[in-house]
Image (tube, rainbow, N blue to C red; front, side, top):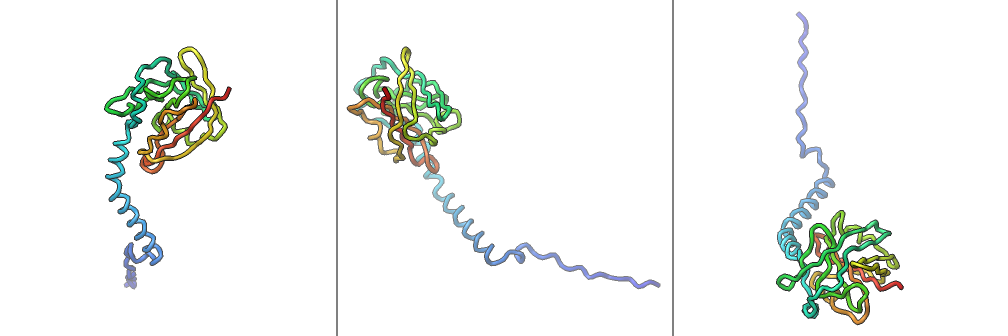
Length: 196
């Protein structure tokens, strides 16, 4: 009779035994970060939801007549070309379009002294490319009958509560406004002055 060879099978290692202490420490840090994000996420989502419409400065409520609103915005360097719709004020907030840029009723009209405010979601097909804008780049605003050319003069990030960036001004300017930061916690504000 032949010798039967019984092989002793080696037990399969458990998953935990293959993890080194360094990997365990890294996993622990990752789990702590995930837990921290999950704890703060509901409040961040509530603030992002509340940030949908844009709260306006009360001084802008004095002039509700829309005489010559912008109808299109173009920033050639960003390949940004969008229609602009009038954003009415509802409950002290400008309503935000989901499909185009919005012009804040009560802000200045194209070519007039004051602060013309145009804003949009930071999404593909809207103001997402605005995060790449540089100083000195040209911004074109079209009204029903005329083009206006502006040059970017300032770029900054502010908190949503800093509504002074959309207050009326004593000079002609356009303020472009969109969300930015983790869970839209900041606002990207781009100011452009006339380029005659």
